[in-house]
Structures are given as structure tokens and as C-alpha cells.
Length: 585
Image (cartoon, rainbow, N blue to C red; front, side):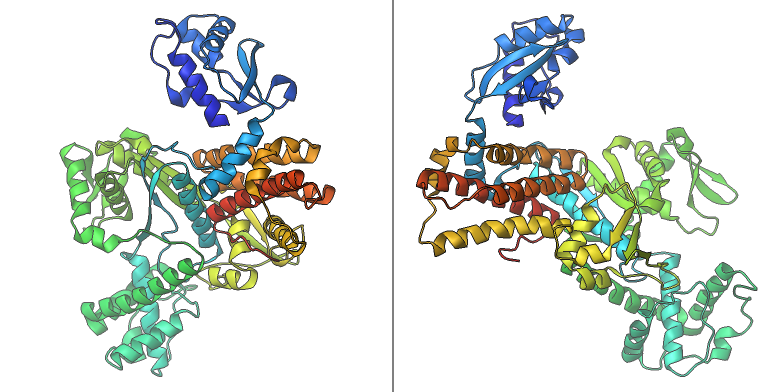
């Protein structure tokens, strides 16, 4: 309905006498919203107020002119100009009946639109370092990113989903040396494990796989490994110690040997991450390797572009990017004094490469600790001649797990973390996806494990799924009583749905396209969650107040057409959230 009214307004603005408006109307500037008070109609717009100043017209006079040019429409019973120049729309009695028919006609496609007009969007999300299993924080990013992609596709954007594999750099070296040390332990060596190594149990099967692959080829005595190393924490510096240990590993098994250890660890961790995400219902169109980015020359090309435009300078043996010229708080190193390119250099090269692949909008979903990332990457894009506002970064806040009111301790390096797989095993995929999306991504999330597992109306995902299943049970009862559902008769008699609860359900159903558009444009899956909870509540109230399988076939079929539409919309919404729609519970 909202979209139809906006199209009517656009037609009216285009039909105004020549010279009324200084320039053709922008469709994106036309907005219709539901009114809070039914006395002001069903919908209202402030378009006359916004256009009055550039048109040099009195807002009320312009509103009257717009109404005079408004094409007739069977949905609109009457209109009025209110206040300083608002236009209120009062819908006809059968407007909601027509919307009910649209739900049935469009089915799975109901609520979808072409708002995005095919704009190409690159959505990068999760992109966790492959140095350990996905934990509950990564799970929230996965649920948010996957749902956002679904929402954007539903409103007409062309979305590609990408996972950026951070398979280069120091963290991968630490994983490799951690794997090698566990490999040595499995060969009988006694070594102290570094404070800065990866201590999780997941390293042991990687080490066992390495031993299966290479046998004793990389086995070295502990005395050779530990000879003359600096002290580890707490007496020494854990960063210096782990770097020395990495260099010692390269000396003892060779650069090629160390690379082979890294490949075994990387392959195992990536396989684990892929499996986790696939089982969580999260898929990607491309897995993009940071090492492949460097091997392709993309980083060198990006740095060369910055250099030719005078955006780089040398200082203390390093190469710096003049990021402050583009709004960043400080200049950034792109090549260290030892000749190694920084993560930042990779990041800006990667985003340039995305633009070179003709993506108009780049959306990154990152953890909350990346708050300084936005300004520096935008600065890099602008310095390379790309629009900085093509990049949008959504930061996903932290997750805290609670069991019986007690907070579950978590910390990745110390191996005190709950994996996504463990969480899914405990509460199930549906509750996992839904609970991750209940709050705005930019707010911390307290995840109540006991509530997520409960089969009560207090559990919001159960409450919504139960509404879907209840409709199925109604249809089974219909069949058991020897009746058949006549959808056409039901829609033809939708005018019989005049009761208070029925009108509330009709009104709630018609809001779905608006809720979907709002969730997509505001990057807010939680808005769709809230809508589905409200629809389910309205339905359950109706279910408890009325009988659906009544003697009068016209009223019976009309009510069944209404509840079947509720089931369709719930299924459409849950599908976008990545949650199942059970027929029975």
C-alpha cells in the first residue's frame, strides 16, 4: 500500500502544471508513512512541506495542487490537507481486502520490491582469521550478514557475499608454530608452550594430521628448538618470544617446511569454518584469499596509484600514506621498514579491487573492535580516486552468553571460548539465528541459553513458529471435519472480515512490505524480527478469540484465507531470517 501511494504521489507531482516545481520530482524523495492516529487517515506524507521552499510556494497551497493532480485510485476513499501542509490518505473499506488478495497471488514473492534497482552490492562478512574455530561472536556476524544479504536481495539489490580469508601475516605464523610444537609433543618432545601461542584443543588434531602427512620429517629435538631463545612471559616479552620461536622453526625445518605446516593448519581451519557456516545456513559466493591478493599484484597496483598521486612519503625507513589529508586521525604505514606490507595496505587494495569489479556499494560487517577501520579505508579509497561513501561499515557488538543467570566466561587465545558449533548444538540453528538478530547489531547482546531452548511463549522464535504451525493445524482440522478450503470464495468475501481482531490482522499483514523495506534500508534485521513478533501476537489473539471453522462457508473461507495469509507472511519473513517454518510443533 505504501509503495502504491508513493507511486500515486509521484504521478501527481509529474502532472503539476509546468513551472510549479523547479525540477522534476525525485522518486527517492517521496515518502509516505502510516499515521499514529486513525483520525488523520491511514497514511500521510510531508512531501508538500519539503518541496514548498524550492518551489517558492505556500506548503498548504502546494499540497492542494498535488491533490488536484492526484490520479483516481480505488484504494483511496478521500484525502485531506492537514496542519502546515501534510497530506492525509483515507483508504477504502476494501483496500485491505485487496492487499490480502495480493498476499495469496504473490505467495513467496509478497513483500519483495525493486527498491534497489539492481544496484550491485558487495557484502563482506565474518572474515574471521582462520586461526581457530568460529566462536559465538563470529556467529552473530554470520547471522547478521547472511540476513542482511537476504533483505537487500528481497528489495531489489544485486548482492554478492564474500569471505575475506586473512591467510597472510603474523597470526598465521603463530598458528603454524603452535601446530608444529604440538606435533613435536606428539613425537615425544617436552616443550613449554608459548604464552602467545594458540592453546585451544583444536590444534591437537591439526598436529596429528601433520604427523600423518609428513611422518617424522619435521621432528626436531626440544634442545635445538629452545636453544638461546629469549625469555617468554611472564619473565620476558611474549611477543618477542613468539617471533623468535617462529624464526627458529623456519631455521630448523626450512622456509618451505614451515610453509607446508602452515598449509596443513590453514586447510584444516578453513574446512572447519566452511562446514560450520554451511551447517548454520550461511553461504558465500566467493572466498577471497589475502595471499592471492598479494600474488596478483593488486597491493602493488594500489600503492603505485597512491604514489603517482603523491599520497605516499618515506619516514624512518617506512612508507606512509597521507591519510590525514582525507579525514583520518593520523597517517598510516603501508610498507614497514623491513619491506613487509601492512594489513592496511592489503585492506585498501582489497577494497579498490572490489570497486574494480564494478560493485557500486561496498558493505563490510566487522566486529566492534574495528571502529577505527572506517575512516582509514575510506581515506584510502578517496586517495585512489574512488568515492569514500561507496564504503559502508556495520560494526557488530559483542555477545555475552548467560546460563541460569550466570555469565559464561570467554576468551579466545586462552581457549576459554564457546564455539558457534557448541552453541548450535545446544540451542539449535533456528534459535541461534533468531536470538542473534533480536537486537540491533550495534548494541551488545545478552544471549539467554535457557530461554533459547525453552518451548514456551516466552521464547520469541517458538512463539512465531507456533503461529505458523497453528495455521497448519487449523487446515488439518478442516480436513478432519470433511470441509474443503475454497480460497477464491474466501477472497471474494473478504468484506466479511469486519471484526476488531480481523481488522487488526489485516492491518498487520499489510505492513509486511514496509517492514521489509525498513529492515533492508536501515540495515536492521531486528526490525523484521519485531514485526514478526507483532504479527504472531496479533494472530494468536485472533485465534483465541474466534472460531475459524464455522458453519457459514463464506465466512469460514474468508477467515481461512486470512489465516493462511498470516502463515505465508510469517514463512516469508522467517525464510529471510534463515529460520525454519515448521508445520507442527
